[in-house]
Length: 158
Image (cartoon, rainbow, N blue to C red; front, side, top):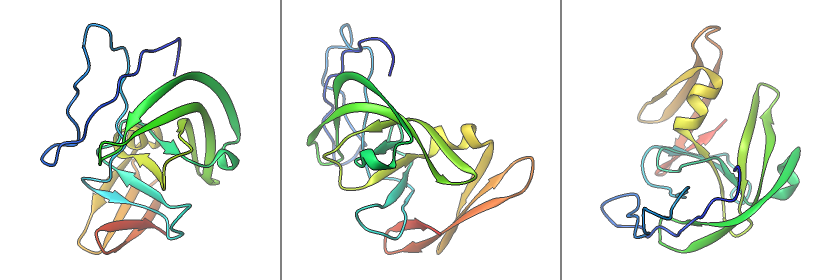
């Protein structure tokens, strides 16, 4: 997050990912944390990485996962249930040797980590395909893949 953005909370709507109730004239950034849409996460519940088509940024609750961290002006995100959560920083991390993430928001009150599909696919130069029981991220140039398995309503990164 750059500068000193004004972040105003968003309220979740049961039919939409979120409805912005803030004054657009004063808002410079908005973030949404949600588990609606096509999602998957890693198998450990608390350290889960949910890939979410409704989030607006990669988000983690775990400072220990960040390789580098920079402070940011405190801001607020709204979870899918409408609960506001404080963003206390931003950093980089590596999930795998081949999967490095920059601009990950640090939000200690989250229960899971979120990977934002629309931020991940251009960063990795990949496509993502969701199937009934699995999902595949595939590098456009090399063909290398990262796969996930569906368990319940979520896809878990393998």
